Length: 355
Image (cartoon, rainbow, N blue to C red):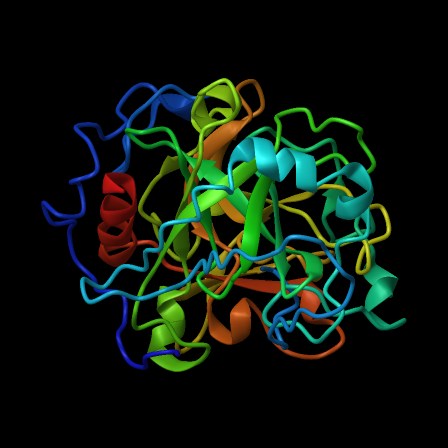
């Protein structure tokens, strides 16, 4: 169910916006920039935008859990407790290298989740002029994997954000991993062991007024809590995290990092693009023009003042918004959208950080 209406509000952050801990980063983040966001030490859908995920197909034994990422309770945040049997250790056992390599939705996808590109759209593959380039990735950005009705899928990107409990990730509101969801930081295709492990998603939080079009698409962002690993460590203590910050304006310089699915980009590798943003006409959203952001990149963070040493920055947006993050059509990978981060994203962050 998608409630309609609601638009991210303008104005200064309220006390609720800053309720997620004592800290606003003043000197601990990249570049020493202050932010209306969480504090902590620095230390990684676009499923394709014009279809919604429908997962079906390959058998996966023992799938009896229902971890819905987006459920809207009366308090305005989404929340659902995961089944106690779904731990990060269980996620690591289930999501083998082979399963991850073959994890693509078998049906149509929404937003920048995972629709196969046409021959025309592949003319601007990552690395070409005016497009993103492949690279090794960063620890605070990774891939969302899920199992739903015996289907396996990678269809979104997510990033770690600094928080008091050090267990929070950010993605697009339209991303819905489904059952047995997992986050894989700095995902490496085909790796026997992932460099920063595999983490079970616990609870999801999204805005109840989010919609695919109209003012509600300005609210297309979501957070999720992640369970500790087998050693009891919190995610952020292993990967580091980016500082959640207000969008400084419609025109700003950002580094965008995401993971297209192998079906859309056979390299099955992280991509990045340094780009200047502009306003999406008629919406409280940003847009960027950079090719290569195919299916799987919804939720990709837009990082201001990205620090090449710490591999972190200030996250001021994430691929999402109108139509799931961009225009429809065969060349949709060339243009991406993001909600403008203001008071509403900090309210939702506060609820997610409180658990």
